[in-house]
Structure formats: C-alpha cells, structure tokens
Length: 324
Image 1 (spheres, helix red, strand yellow):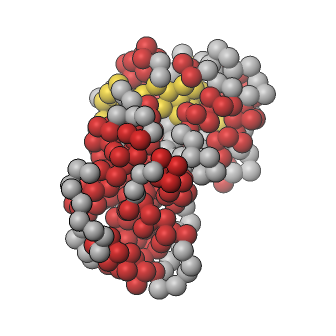
Image 2: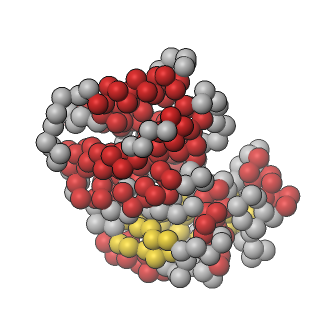
C-alpha cells in the first residue's frame, strides 16, 4: 500500500515514521521553502524522529498525490481549504484521505471533513485520525490509544485494523461530528490549563469536567452524540493536553499568563474563535470557551490579572444543574 503524508511538521514526520515502521511504502511531502522540510532533507531527522531511508521525502506535491492510494494530511487546520485547492488539480477520485489534524475552520465553523467534502472529495473516502498521544512518548515506545472515524463504516474499520500496532491501539469512532468537534475543542481547554498552571489555581479537575460538559452540549446541538465528548478524541486526550509538558496549547496558555510570546502553532487559539461562532449559531452556552477566546483575542495587558478576572467571572455565574 502506497501512502503519502502531506505535511512534515511534528505530526506529519511522526506519521511517516510510524507508517513506514508498519511496513508501508511511505512518501512524506513538505513545501521546499519550509524550515521543517529543509531540516529533514539535509539531516534526515528533526527534533522528534529520524526518518527511515525507505521513506521518500519530496517537495513535489503532484508526485506525492499521484503515487498514493492513501493521502494523510497533517498541516495547520486553517490552511486546509487553500491546500485542498492545490490538491484537487490532480486526479484524486480514487484516493482515500485521512485527516490527522485537529481544528475547526474559523471563517465558517466547518469541521475539517466538511472542508474536504466542499473541496470535492466524496464523504465516503474521508477519515479522521485523532486521540491522545505525544510524539515524544511514542518514539520512546510508550503506547497509547487513538481513534479513526469516518462516515464510511467499512473505511474506518479497514484503516484502524491496518494501522494498529503494539504502539497505537486504534478504536473505531462512532460519531464523526463528535469526534472532530471533541478533538478540536480539547485544545481550547489545554490553553485554559496552561494559564491555571501559572496562576496556581487548582481547577484542572473542574476544567476537565465542565469543559467536557460544554463540549457535549455543542456536539448534541450540532447533531452528534453528546457522549462523544467523553471518548478518546476529547476527554481521553485531556491528560495529554492539560498536563503534558509537550502540549503546544498548554504551553501557549502558560506563556500567555506570563506575558510571553509562544512561537509555535497552538490550534486552540483559532479553535476558540470557531467554537464561539458555533455556540452563537446553535444557541449553546460555552462559558469556558468564551473565557479562552476573550483572553486570547482581548487587548494586551496584564495577562495574569485578566486571567484571574476571567476565572472570577466563571464563578460569579448563576447556579446551574450540573448536567444542564
């Protein structure tokens, strides 16, 4: 089976590494001008993985697309629609697309699989691969569980069975809406967790519980199964995102609270904006998401003070039934 992984950042390079170790014929694409690609091209490795010589590293997008039976995409979620315009120039009607990325399109509130469908890919040829796990742990041989979901039941089972190993145990997803929204939303909670780490307020337990509950309400309003919020894609990924030193989103929240700038990608920032849009569209109250959005997009200032005030605003809300 020939697989092309499009994107050679930390997840893209890891997926290429992982699938090659599973015995697949793997190509890893990255743009020639991108620093991540140049480092891999020059050294064969980055700070996360050393690519096997069997992996074909290329900056030729047409070559990567044409050769593949399965195309795995791992790029910034907000660049997906524009990227798909480039991919759709080539014949892809017989390709399987797997999205190994987490986010919601800011301008439209669309899930990433919806972006692919609107770009011209048939829904039954799209799958998403999400769930807990950091590359730094995987490459040390520390196993974890993940989920593959799709509107096509046969496809998700085929992919999960083909990709599973002693390192990653895959489950079959049962709710594409919940899987995608949950996976994206947990990055918003990661930002909140990083801020809490700095101001030393022991609220991660309530954050996990109440955060999952508000995401469950949104999933249900969008037509998904609210129980998906308590699955691997969302609540199952909380340990990785809320507590791990490797999480970009937790680190973003920490540095924000310190008044410092985080230079790497933190998908939770645009996701908080997209979720705010969805909350308004579907009439769902998302208090934690609103706080994260306000802190991320508010005026610069004393960030720790703003975060403490934001937490106080959550505590001053009127009483609710726990499972409202």
